[in-house]
Length: 211
Image (cartoon, rainbow, N blue to C red; front, side):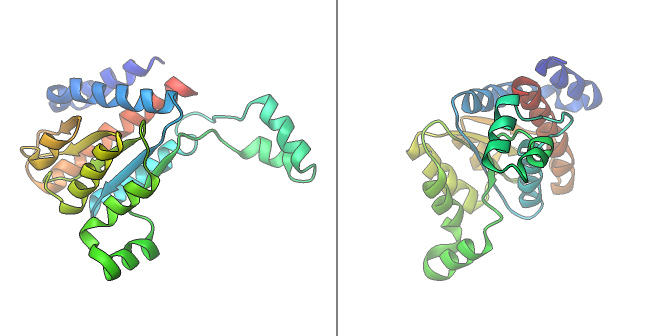
């Protein structure tokens, strides 16, 4: 299947998302360019959006709907590196698209909150992990999450591309991010219900492109 077919299928299943089809496509283009050039994706969010950040990493860092087998050349190198374990590694390892959820580092985030300022924890991680050519995806149903907005500023200063996934009127995130997908709902749980199919489609498109 062509990557764009997944986008068309998304709109067929969720007609309300037709209003943000162009923004989803622009987000895909940013992510495709990032991965094509050896970059990585950082993801920040709170609460349900924290869970979404971890979910996205799970779809990108291993097979989603494809097995993503390693190349024959790498399989040979695994066997050379460890004749005992290499064959099993070659059979079971899967290709990944580098993605880090900034939500999962409890020791770092709590230390930074205790020692410095919890609102800047995502920004600190972005500064530590990020480089020009990487992408920061900020997820916020209101578009106004303080810690996400601080991370966005750090990402822009580093020369990273930024994507917002939000709802309602888009809030500050819409104004800050290079591209914002503002799903057409106003209640938090309904916004989150539309975020999932949007990022699933993006992950499917990326997997089709690179694997």
